Length: 235
Image (cartoon, rainbow, N blue to C red; front, side, top):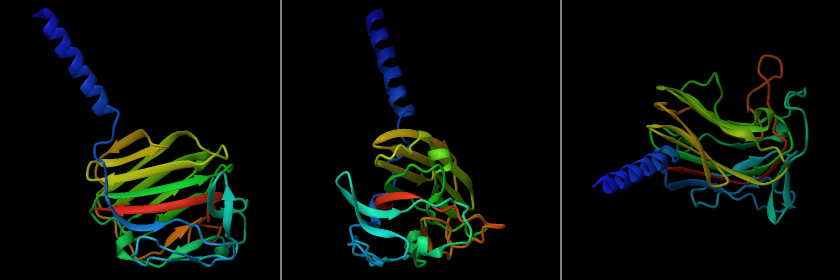
């Protein structure tokens, strides 16, 4: 009997450990937009391969058709995140579409990228001043962070280590009613529990930096590096 109790106790600890080390939810499952970024050099339209037609406009300074380590993507050549003057040609802009707003649904963003830079905003819809909240991915000191801010609060998680080693990394962030969680290269990192509420704004989705900035009161936080693909899911 004592042996049975010991085995049951060991099994319970194992289950609790497994639950603590995985996200509370698998997150969203329906693909809203999928930008594979496989366009040829000189392309100026980022094509949504999901079939929903949520295409983006590629700025003139974004280099397309770049191949590195077997992947084809876009490149943002190095510039300081705060370099004046503001350079909107470094951005990809996707017109406001309510399918790109999390609303109150489960919402996931996955990005495969590489960089050697120590800062910059990678992708976002809305900014700190946005009515209706916003979400973003940023890389302060090379650490990838994702943040969701809505009517119910603000939750964010980070990669826990710098990822600016010049290698490809795949980062996924899930926003659910339970909180915000992150996986890096398929490995669960962390969940920050708590609600964020409704997130819905009228801003364009911006890749490569902020869509509204002046480098005086609002820095542009330009990204430098490569992006292989971005996928957004909701459900």
